[in-house]
Length: 322
Image 1 (cartoon, rainbow, N blue to C red):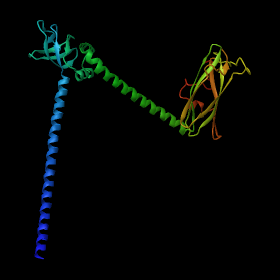
Image 2: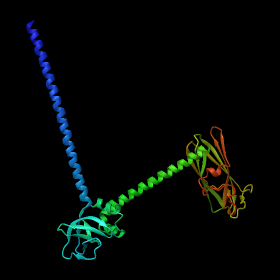
Image 3: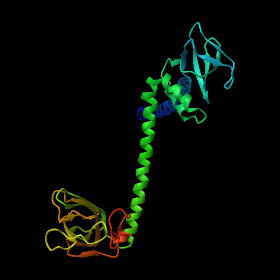
C-alpha cells in the first residue's frame, strides 16, 4: 500500500513538472515570435528606405554632356562658358523655364539649354516629372524628349495613353450616367418605348431605305412595332409614293421579339418600303407597340417627349418650309 501511494505521488509531481516546462517553452515561443515581428519590421523599414533611395536616383538620372553644351551659372544668366575639350558626366536634377539644371561629377554645375546630352540610364520617373511641371517651357520639354527619345517613346507616351484612356473611360461613365438619368425620367413619365434612331437614305432607284433602332424600357416583350410617317419634298409639300396608292404615307411594321429592357435595330437597305426620288423629309406621326401579352402602347403626343433631340427624327410640322 505504501509503495502504491509513493508511485502516485511521484507521478503527480512529474506531471506538474511537465506542465511547468511546457508553459515555460510556450512563453519562450511567444517571446521569439515578438522578436521575429520586430526584426521583420526593421527589414521592412530598410526595404522602404532602399526603395526611396532608388526612386530618388531615378528621378535624378545620370547624364553625359557633349563638348558643345553651354552651362549658365544662373537660370536666366547671359554669361556662360563652353565645354570644348571633353565630355562631362553627372546628373540632371531640375528643369525650369527654358533650361535644365546639371551637376557634374567634377563639381561643375549650371543650367543648360541645348539637347546635346543623353541619359546613361532609364530616367522614366524624371521624364514624367518634367512632363508634369507647369513651370517648364514647351521648348524645354521638346529638348528633353529629343535627347531621350528611346525612353520617352516607351515610358512617357505609354503614360500619356494611359491617362487619355482613363479620361475617356471617365467620360463614358459620366455619359452613361446622364443617359440613365434621362431614361429614368422617361420611365417615370410613363414612357416605356423609345425610337432611338430613325434615319434613311435614297438608293439609285429613288427608294427610301430607313435605318431604325428601338429601345424597350418595359419588362414585357415587344411582338410588333408599327411606325406611321409622312414623306415630304424639299419645299414641305407631300411627296407621294411612285407606286401603290399614291399617298405620302410611309407605314413600317417591325417584327420582334424585343425582350424587356433591351434594344433592337432594323435596316431596309436593298428593300425600300417607299419610292420617291424627291423625298427629302419624313415626319413620324404615330407609333403603336404590341406586346406578346396582347397589350398595346400608342405614342402620338409623347413622341416629342420621348425624342432625344431634334436630330433623331422629325415630328408633325417640322418638314414644313420655314
